[in-house]
Image (cartoon, one colour):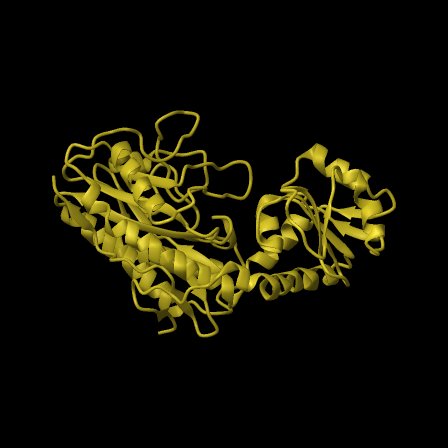
Length: 408
């Protein structure tokens, strides 16, 4: 067995963000610089919220300039109360070249911008500030690559988040009342999450996926196709946000899956648990057990060097032999993955999916979510967050995994 399990519900030692700032950010900058060196890049100019969190520890309005051979420098618009050795006020990006020179920094020969995140006009405006520099759009890809290997401090953040996440889920039976709709229960769960400290925001990379905190899926709504690349869909309560609860009653004999993002400190842990309204048909428990078997097999065999596609195929083999392939990861529209990287965004690398030749590396953190949707009943399955260690996997989210029965 390669996976490591830490005691459920036990909070890791407290970590203070100020304590981590200097050494942690230095480590992160070093990871980015290694990748910059490989591509002959002199500097990075970072301005998107998520990458600013990663490189300077918080969201600001401004520009983090990361040269290859000098300390990072923050050119700051707002808030205007921040001070520091390498913090300089700025009003507009056209000031950057002059301010760099005033700080004793040479203008870069090759500089990368976040080409996959910046609006077209913003990208062109920043590039035009450096007419004699070769500007490359590879910043998003390169920083996301660095972010895919978490530092020890980042993994500790996931552990802290997981404890709060489990506390909220443990109280779900206490806020359920017979006769509720899925939306009414989802409101109560969102309240539980917020009371435990969830920040609420659900950050997703790209412009094509949106959701509020997560989803509660019950009955046949779990099979409703979605335009978003989530594991399961749901109709939602309005076409402007087509995902999750759709305001239908929670009925006896139905299952419901709670899948909320555990953003308690900026890092999005992921955990799904299944509840039932009264007893479910026997096949629902059998299908749920198959999903647990997939998790057990992946946890026991995955390790550094494991190929993502091969782990996906292993799951498909288990589900197919058990006879659930037609319902695995959806019915009408199936999700083509069983796991995804998590971090400051919910969809980071790696992805456990067909044709994904990437291998697991120590420091990666991902959610594994084998799920089955049963017509007339609803969703069953499991989702936990895992960290890749030198030896195998460490489970980060600890919460009972059996189907929890709620009163009909």
